[in-house]
Image (tube, rainbow, N blue to C red):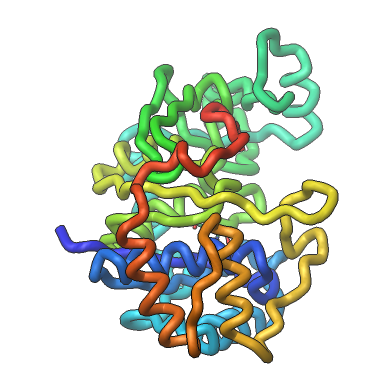
Length: 304
Ligand code: GLU
């Protein structure tokens, strides 16, 4: 199958130095494979959507010379597809309603025994065996089977996660009625025939959940490559939440050079943006595909 990649920003604000790394890496990987590069705006989480951010992100990508293939997809236009996937899971008995409040979950997880990476504790399955008629459904959860999911990350090497132990039955439809990121991303990657997911390492811990869901929905599982996160002076991940400034696009070439350095490469002697992409694509295509070379401090059992 020929390569189809994608960049899937959430429009909670404009691109910053951290999200630019994911955008640049996914674009380069697609171009280096002679593939297609799609853009999908993940605007389901309406409380976090910032007015005008989607258009701004598209403008930023364009200014940086990252021209996408085909129409931009918006998840807010895809609700029927998520409902259909949910109905399929429901018909297979793989989802159940959950009436737990945040407070109840917090109390019951405190009673769980065991070792939990990063101090995060899985949902203890409280509502899995409660008859649906006895519940006021707040959210809907997926029945996660026991067992370890293994996958190969093209940057990090072999990874694994026991989703039941690390995360538990996770939410696929939130209490506020919003389709959860995990469900929407799997449905859309399948619908857009994405073969290769390139994104930031903050999403590494979602991969096993997504592969599990893809298996349950009977859709193809894309290969993954998770690039390092950009951190600030205090070691915190750059994010819109902690006020990372928008990219300064008065000098697009310089933004690309800085992003390229973040990916661990050396500055390119490029005359302009087009020249940068031509050279960077060549270098990326020749770079060793696996990564442990790049060094990282993420654990394979990171539960996020
Ligand atoms: N929308 C997600 C974000 O901006 C990325 C989703 C993905 O690449 O799977 O963090």
